[in-house]
Length: 48
Image (cartoon, helix red, strand yellow):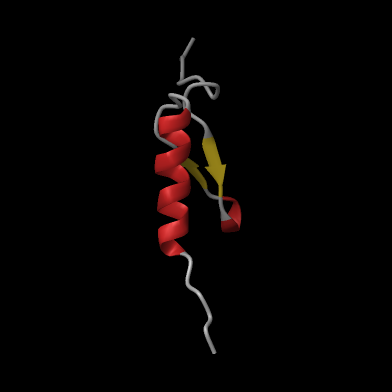
């Protein structure tokens, strides 16, 4: 039997076009800070 990584420990982000991207290992609030920080860095603000 082939064993993969636990989805509980290594969440998967389902992106556009049905792509699955493995996230870093979940370790609590540090994971949230890093993940949300990376997402926020990609946001742009329309100031027009």
